[in-house]
Image (cartoon, rainbow over all chains, first blue to last red; front, side, top):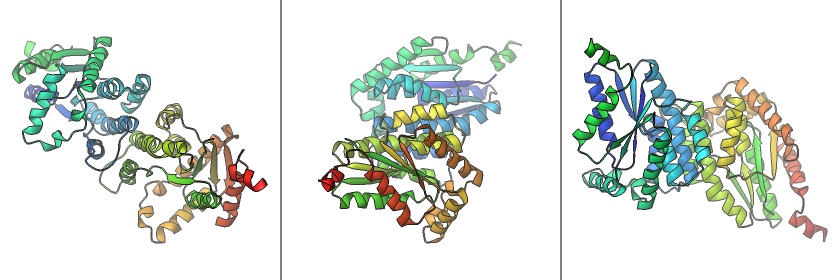
Length: 221
Length: 221
């Protein structure tokens, strides 16, 4: 069984911290786990990420932004995710197709039908088995992201997305919740407002509840 | 009336030389003409072109390549082509959506139906009024491209596309001809094997034959 699990959420939702803890937790149980991130999970993706962070003098329209994320995803799936799954690794991915629908669809207002078609193409039909959505109020997330930026991560401070207006982030949160509501069997909504430890315990509960979890078989024996 | 004319063809087909001559020819007749090229027609597009020429150490799969071209096109249409057309300029474009179908569809074998959907999105529904297809045998085109590369244009020599096998370029030629056959009212197939001057005269004949050509109205008066 292939295990592809995605971590989704808005700015400051804590998913990047949680994905690392989750991968460590799996590895401690003898499960080979890879944690990777979009858009920068491949050398091409890191180049695309640089373009998207837009520290140069170029303009990026909403359509081009959408297609750059899709290009990074296509390479990520082909070069990293599919080979790791084939090799029997668990893959935990920090943002995937749902992020595109939430940010570029609900956030920027681009056509959701086209985005779904584009997502299926760039993901080469790969779908997550489970998606953890870290949800918290927009203000709380932006405050965290700002604190992180001030704490010696100047690149985060310049991120175009964090500079967007509050309404944009509100649309993204609503978008994520609506995507999750349409696929309740795939999504687990996790309250992102808790402490790192509290949220991590919730993540572990979600992982433990997966069917046929190999290490649980062993622990039960 | 908006004048959007695209120049298409394989490697060494002469379209880049011809587009400059055509733009000059229009300007000499008092027609404001802009000649522009894909994928590098915008600052973002030039960055994307650098990624595609692949002088670094990253891998680009067929899907990512397709989406990078589409991203460059979306920005090109929004930032350059539509504003120029709105301002009353003629726009002559070196490669457009047909190139994506020919290279990534017929050449790389990606799904043509998806490419058409993607093209419509990235072109923001803009379609050329007329497309000049510069056709010539693959060997002749590749020989020209090689000669150009040896003549002090090292960047062209490294172009990934020119290094592709002959069969790939054969599929592109057949692809272009089949796209043209499906839309005979839009396409003009020009024999690209002739001299620069002969081909230029043929291009001028195509431009002169456009309905309601403003300078012809004047010349006839």
